[in-house]
Image (cartoon, rainbow, N blue to C red; front, side, top):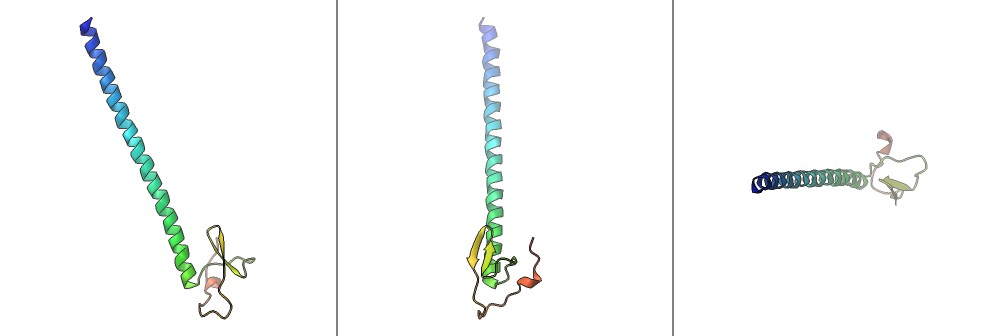
Amino acid sequence: DDSNLLPRIKIRDHSRKSLEISRSKREKKSIMISVVIITELLVEYTTALAKLTAGILPRRTGDRNALRVGGFLIPAPSATSMIPDFSSHLVDF
């Protein structure tokens, strides 16, 4: 009976190791996906902040006194502001 027990133990150990390896790979993939998503968000908001600083954010027809950054509305600079408005040259998707 000991001869049958040894191969079973080896098979269990091998399958346990392969499960641990696949779990590790899944964790690495989920971390990579999270990093990509966070990077994309940072790029979007950094771009919007740069446009806000430069005063060139695109405006929608109903947004006369506000700038739209992502899902947020920020009060626009006054008409006498020294920041030029180049928003008419941009395409608003």
